[in-house]
View: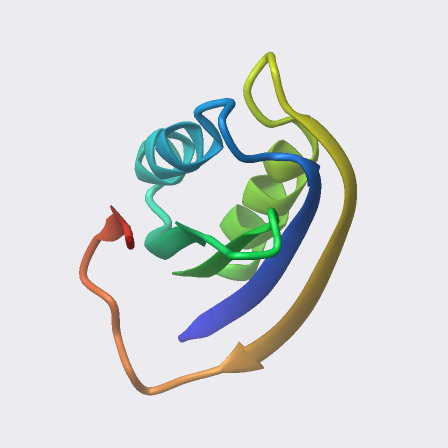
Length: 90
């Protein structure tokens, strides 16, 4: 299974970014999770086919209307661990 791990920087907390990310992932059929980080950034781990993950990453740059993404750090990998759905972690 393909996956990527991303840290999203900018104005991404307090703007519904996690809920938007979950909804976007579910619409695309991507599984994984998203959570706020103590430093004000947002972290996500997403699994799916490479084309869907590429689309998901492009969508993260847009974010919800009130968000302002300034940078996304990503790493891509393969995994045998399958995450069955997309959730918000707290």
